[in-house]
Length: 115
Length: 130
Image 1 (cartoon, rainbow over the protein chains, first blue to last red):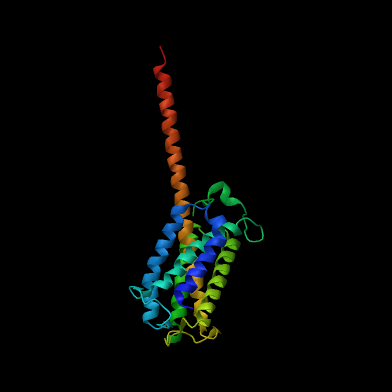
Image 2 (image 1 turned 135 degrees about the vertical axis):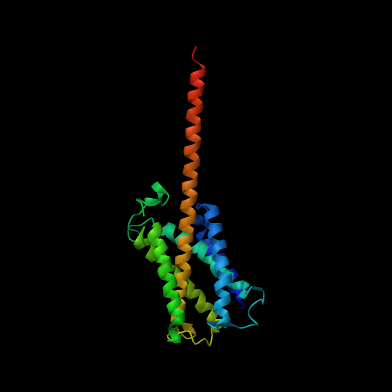
């Protein structure tokens, strides 16, 4: 299995499982987050590969690069922009996983006092 | 010393994010338990994805001298867990910031409309006077 197949499967399963929660979140903040993470990926993935932190099997990637980052690696950025907001939203419902469950419903997550 | 460079860079970056988090009360300084679960589960999920990629032979550990050499699993360096924590944490902070800004903009727009509405009602009431 090549990297693009694995990543499309992972993103597909993640989106399908997250959908009931994801569709209720505001769209633009999600898109904006994904876009910023993709820019960070283009910069830092390029550096990480350049210094040899990890290597790809050239026969298992498409070979399409954005600067020095393989196209497939942007799947991690997009997955983070889906998974993290969905986890945060779901985990905010229970007292076991949140110290102020239900707080977002009232204030949209705004801080309670001045920082 | 060289072997600590990548881990050190990741820790410094995580520290920088924590400063932003504290300043704007976005995640751990808003709800620590929920942030820990979110980032923790994010790391576990991404590690499983990494293990799938390693098992399929898509990528492997490089020969960089900037890593400690400590492995969590064959070909999976300790540093990867910190990198994935950084990815999850930056995603959480960015989304919390953008989402909160959207909520505040909506509230501002509503307040403006309400203020305009009540002023027009006031003006209308004035015109009706004899």
